[in-house]
Image (cartoon, rainbow, N blue to C red; front, side, top):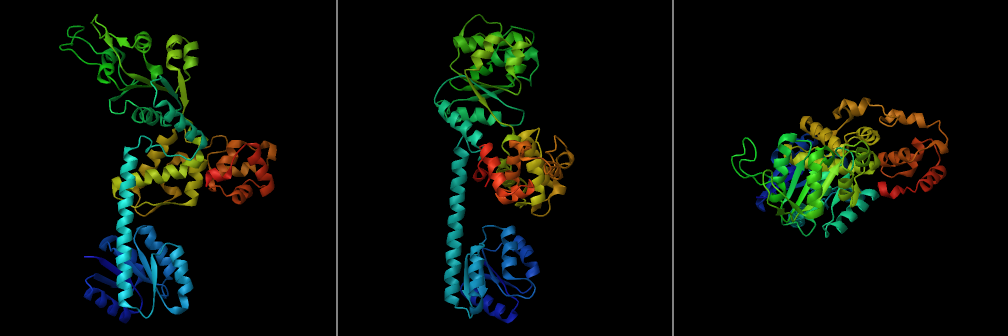
Length: 457
């Protein structure tokens, strides 16, 4: 049975409307005290809400905003007199589904409820379909509006139809594994295994056996034959994460796999063919590792056929709000919470922070915040201490922006300008004011650094 919640300070009118709706087959609940509406919605879970615009305790527009904060897709229909139709139209602009003028026509209300239920059902169905499509997309977990990231994803799409060996570089926590998975699952090998090997996560003594496999009796404890990662991944891809940690003796054996497409198990003289794609990742400078004698030069050039660099989060600050919403959706579903907003001061601190742990650090910070959050808005107090107190070159905390106000235009940096735009969501006027510049001079900076404010909206 459809549940309808009615909010009106006129108790007599409320009682009449409740009874009328019950006669039509609805389960109706009337509230004359607006202060308990949000709690009632959380507990009773209505399908439609009617709200009177003119109430002494709170204006209907303000109550509408509170309801939408609790349940964004809940249809809200406003009740209004003829003299406030203009305000009702304003309510629709703010998210109300429709409005009804007094005195009520019960048939009109019945029709509006049915339309609201149908539209909500269609909206939920479309949302579910979109989510299913996103789940099937290899790029669904990569959230970005950044030009460099979009260029990277375009390169991934191009490379997905090839078998080229790819080296993914970038700092820890930037999402190198996601790029590797996108390469595999968007390519011709998508229906075959994707095997991940963390070169830093296994002791050297067993790493060779894990990669290449072994035969029975090849060493103490080898009681049976064992397939290695290369054999398990036949016709698929092997992702060597943190390839710089691969022991020097094993680097030669991996070179043979890449060059000859073949390998031998530990303790076996037979040659096995390797129909696999090699993808590698590192957070180190492999060329420097070659210079220090820790990494084979010939393997470096074999791996570096195509190199993809994943930028750190501090170079794509405009993605912080987008990533925040993405992670909040994930954690709300997991912890059954409704944390749907972030205070401006919190966003400012998050945008200004350097994020040395990159996207992984942002994700962890938000998971912690949602876990302990009891209301629906993340504030400064919910963020880790390092975000609030860190000081890295005057860019990590919001008050540090004052240091730039005395600088001349020539002293402005691209990072500072993009940080301002990210903080103020592409608003040039606010960004210019924060930099203590007029709009004209701020736009000169945008032109000098080849930055578009539209990319941050």
